[in-house]
Length: 190
Ligand code: 5GP
Ligand code: MG
Ligand code: MG
View 1 (cartoon, rainbow, N blue to C red):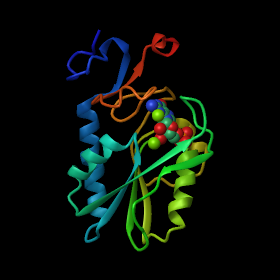
View 2 (cartoon, rainbow, N blue to C red):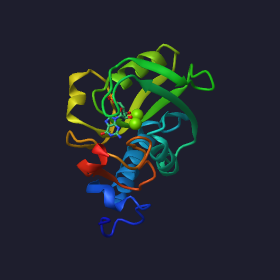
View 3 (cartoon, helix red, strand yellow):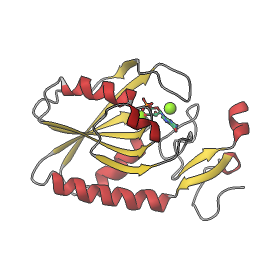
């Protein structure tokens, strides 16, 4: 049955196993992250780089919470691998629309799992001469410690489970949920 008290579930309720982070928990954490980032970047203009598609909801809420003038760019990358794990071989599907040299770039990521995608992305963006380059990730899994990726801002450390919602998909579904949850096993077996 749909999780009680969590707001609209877009009809996905029957697929949800358990909710890890409610909409209220996510929004409250975004407020905290935005406060810290606004202090760290005071007097500067921030260029937010959202990694499509997972970071779209996070970007939208974070940009509204952040009391600083910000600009937005998006990048889409694909890491070759299975539906639920990445390989570290990354391909750019959509590049930034403009030069980031001299800009204060803050990369917004949905989740860091192995860290391979982000590690590749940081090398790539770092080579374009930004004034500064930092990462703000909403979620981080335990495996992320295995790859050395400097992530300055983290929302939540979560257990090593496959999660969906709030931008995160399984087979392109569930991104539109306002909370983060796991799926019942039968969803994966079809
Ligand atoms: P990494 O390269 O850090 O292993 O994984 C990067 C990407 O894999 C994330 O940006 C995300 O798109 C996907 N990913 C990793 N863990 C999860 C998860 O638990 N759920 C979903 N939906 N995607 C994940
Ligand atoms: Mg991502
Ligand atoms: Mg995905």
